[in-house]
Length: 402
Image 1: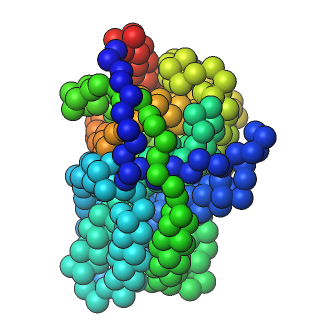
Image 2: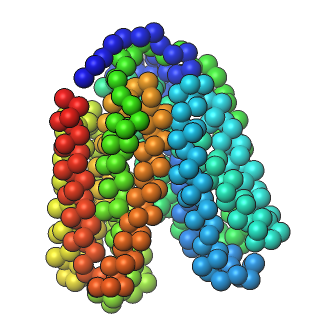
């Protein structure tokens, strides 16, 4: 592996004093709190759409499939534009793009809230996808820039937990608010929150000093594509099953709506805990060791879930372990990429998020095919096999880099 030291790029903003005596100082705490809230808001914007689709389709008098294009155009726009923003942030800095993205987020959600026609509604979600593409991966990159070298895994896991928390708190909260205030109110509220966060980030990063010296790891587009392919495979393994989890529990166990909701709760709690634990473990044992080990454990958990998919209450424990190992694998691999591409961190995080969305799409298609052609109980075994392939790929890549 070729390494050389170069002068720091002025566009990478890194705080040099964020921990004192092993503890976070006030600036480090502020960064983590604001980043966590930002990713919680963005995650809520993504996850809240699903429970609101029936009400949105009624408002515009379109069928649910047409309303579902809100999610489709958001995902396509995000996946296509994230690498561009990542590359720009590596060259021009993170702050301006994050502030711009949150301002656009506020505008897009305001347009969603007051869209007069279905066409305007879809256009607003295109803008939302564009806005999130210039925020989420750049926050991951900025945290990777700012965190001390021995704490990168912990810092990244903390901010990722904001996004995961929105899965099991933000979306249900949105459903409650819809019942009380209507779906337009929810998007209006997120527009206001986005505007406040845009101003907050402008102040937060304003005084960030220039970057310290960092080592440059030689690499090209093909190497980065190979690196993020692990995330693509991970997403297929997780979402081929997750998208159809409710259907599988209903058809195989006869689960009631409340039991399905409880299953999602176990899953969400496991995801948050796994994510936070992975940060501590990667800082202690190394990003390569933990990212490889958690992918192997994910495969084992999914295969175990397959054997207990019809075993009553045992399924809750395996759902918890599936999410625990799955999101530990995702977070540790993100920390691995942040360490692997120190001066291309924005680009790497952006391509990783594009791989994530591409894998989610591929996984949903694969899962849909399996449940239509075979039975739902096949899905955990299929996902476990894909996760095992991701582990093999991750090990090969780690050995190649040595």
